[in-house]
Length: 107
Image (cartoon, rainbow, N blue to C red; front, side, top):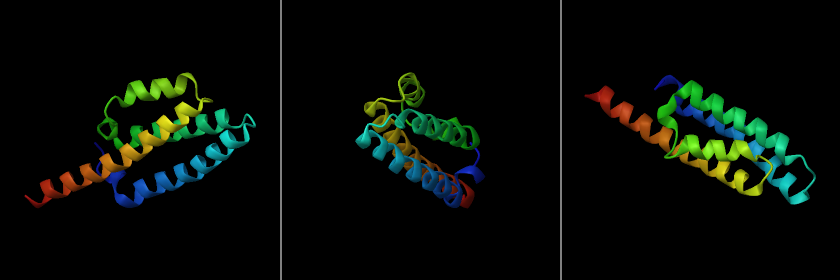
């Protein structure tokens, strides 16, 4: 795990980017204008870059399987919801890992 990559400031930057994409994806699904798939593909790449930079330890339970499900049909609303959950769980997991790393450093 790359402790520097899960620093709060870096994680917040990743999630700010996700929140922008998430709003666009949500609007695209509401409008049913066909833009959701391309936006989802961007969001998937962003998520994969986050995991690559931070380390596999940040992946939530069944993260690889869930990501494969999302990648198989990125235009589906269910995949958008699943990706949103992956982002939320990853954010919580990075916070927990930061806390654990801090505790280790103190000892």
